[in-house]
Length: 226
Image (cartoon, rainbow, N blue to C red; front, side, top):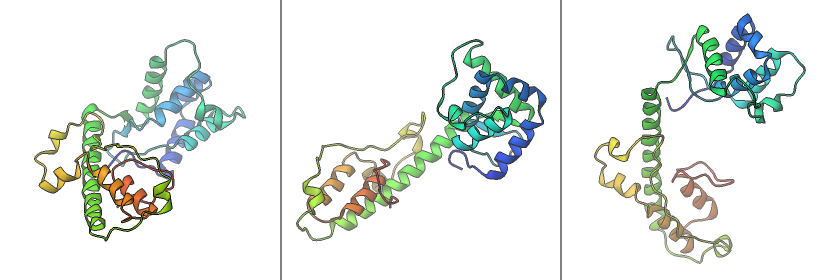
């Protein structure tokens, strides 16, 4: 599983448990603690001791939950966008206190080993996406050259290269020996080949956006990568 998965059932279950935890609610009336609890819950750094599927709590969902639990007629946006207010105790103490409360309810922080495994899988997924993108590039390179479309003529092109995205602290040599195709896919020149396809009229704007997305870089309005 890459990262955390969210389900409404997880959110409701946690909110119900927190609402019945008198110690947590007492601390939650401290607005600095409430902010710390918010940031901890959306950090993606929590897993369950019982091994059940991990949940990701989205920012809006958690902000609304904090507001409901505090019951002070506040706006959820105050927690969604606001940093922890200055003051004492330190933010680290607040985080540890929030983590202690959640620990009683069956949650814990991810270990470094767990994070590394997640990042390794994300890197492998990105490598696979680059291979798929390379195959589409080769397919489009076989098209006949044509006049570039108007959007190409108005584009400000830069000689940017895009290397393989390595998640977290993952090193490329951890992926093991790469196949010739994978080596070609992680080449920084792949991005330049995509630009060449546009300049030679072999791809349209939507195809260009999807190919660039396949390198791991999102563009506004792009379709899903190949």
